[in-house]
Image (cartoon, rainbow, N blue to C red; front, side, top):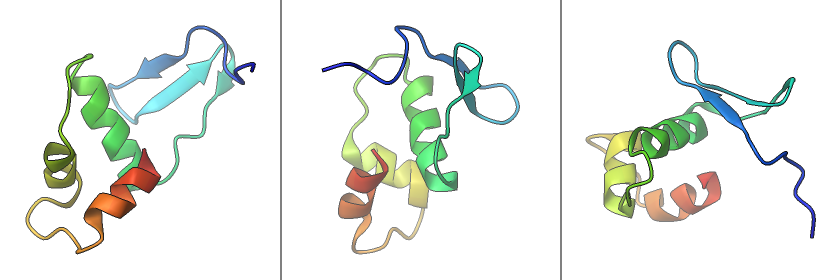
Length: 74
C-alpha cells in the first residue's frame, strides 16, 4: 500500500492552521476537524483522551453524538 503523502507533512500552527506536503497544501477539512488536528498537534505526541477532544471541540455542550462525530473527524 502506498501513501498519498510524502514522508514529511509540514504543519503551520501560527495563524491559520495549514499543512503542506511538499509544495501542495493539504485539505484539512472543516473547522471542527481542524480543531481536532490542532489539539492533537499541541499535545506533541502525547495521548489525548476522547473526553479531552470532546471538551476541546464542543466545550460546555457536546451533542449526544459527540463520540461518533469525533470518530468521523479523526
